[in-house]
Length: 70
Image (tube, rainbow, N blue to C red):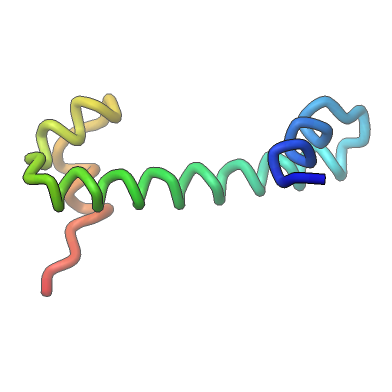
């Protein structure tokens, strides 16, 4: 089985333990995807405001979460 199949089955499950594990896995996936795409947007020259607008959050929130000073 693939991860997406496992997630779909977990989301549809009547078993609360499986359903809640699936929610946790989806949260981790969402965080990884967001970080990946924020980094990609910054590498392509997007402003913090443009990223915030796309995510429908404040500029301060996205900047604070992802700004990694080097």
